[in-house]
Length: 252
Ligand code: ARG
Figure 1 (cartoon, rainbow, N blue to C red):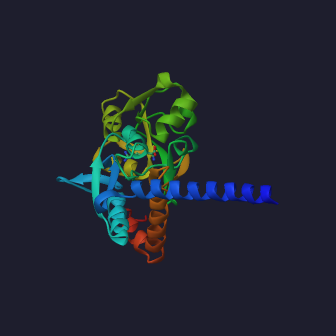
Figure 2: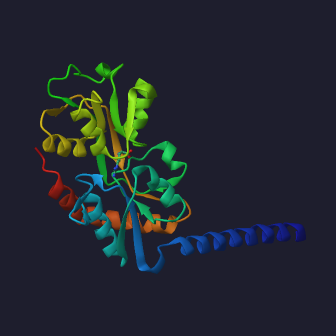
Figure 3: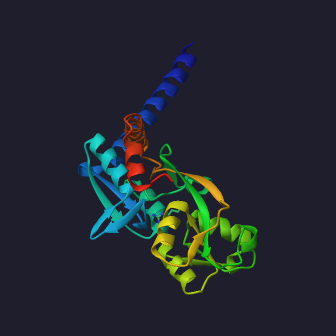
């Protein structure tokens, strides 16, 4: 009996220690100084883009609405898309919000919030291109944004020797316009704005991959993850999420 009690006691104190440990860690990581720092790559309309010096778009507005709900100030930090996961996992940013797709690989380094939007990888080509389907991409030069899912899928499916990586989606589109690449694989909404902004381009009707967008959070900061999921749910229930999205994405 005595033995049992001491074992129980040991288990209980270990559990208590663990509980204290994790909550102390969690609270030390939960948003400092009342400022929610969002890491993004602001060349991804309509999710995030510059209007003058200000970063605006769906993600910027959702982040602001989330920050308001949590009583926090929002600070947006623009960086290469490739740096966002590192910024979040090293604690330089509280949250990555960048039209970012949930992937198993990324889940090794960050946690993802509930999903707030859907994205589709599509193919942009010149209007007179002989590329008419995904299969036609075989052996062609494909432009992508570095480290995006478009980059990852195309490298897997068509070989890295056929994939040209650019830091910004727009740079990949410029390479298509000037004939350096034969196609660009990118998310559907930015694709639409690039095609609208440049003459002689079109989007193939066949969709490549459908995916979920979510906020990336530090693995240790589960408290913030719950707070953000709570805020997202409220925004969804209030219709605010739809309102923000439909302000930027007009249904055809
Ligand atoms: N959805 C794609 C991904 O997660 C592309 C996101 C690019 N976002 C950006 N803000 N540049 O890989």
